[in-house]
Length: 247
Image 1 (tube, rainbow, N blue to C red):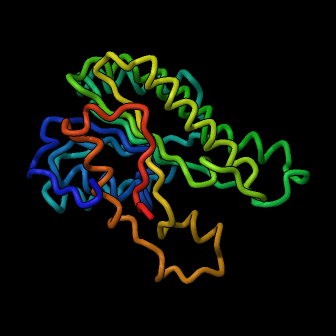
Image 2 (tube, rainbow, N blue to C red; image 1 turned 90 degrees about the vertical axis):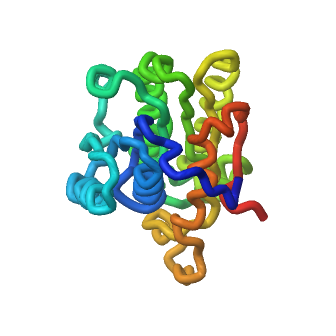
């Protein structure tokens, strides 16, 4: 799966929503899904970045994407219900959902975590994903097969000092995925996690400012796993956590 190369247009007639689609891993995932025939819904908070991804997809002769400007920090359950209704009306169903957007927050001792930072990180990394997934379940059920991918982290598998809210939020992400996978085990929806590993993104640069970014894996190199989990070939995978960069 880490060297997976799908057939051309294997995602044709599929609709996939990618959060955090304006930059980093989300951008590359959106571009790759579009490359293989999907109609991609680009969700993010910075319109200019989403428009840049939109333009690149069009320039590469992909299907016209949809843009959803939404700040997960302030979005409410009604925002997600409205989005689900719009997707249902415009596309009929949702074949894939990649929860990629995350907030790092401040790194530091547990005793110094501020209530505001805690709330901000948990809102984006956990609550927004809960509300969005809940709202989209009915649209995902309309697809013949649908795949939901959550994004975890090494610090969400084993806690790490000074990573406080972010680490804890990723443990919650793991738990959410496993609950959903168990509940929908005998349905058309499958739920899994990807741990991207050390990847060259703005978040990584913020967490490791002294690191030589040229020695970190660029996002496009981990895309085979993202493509595999949207393929029907992976339909038996449910409730699993995959390493994008196996050691």
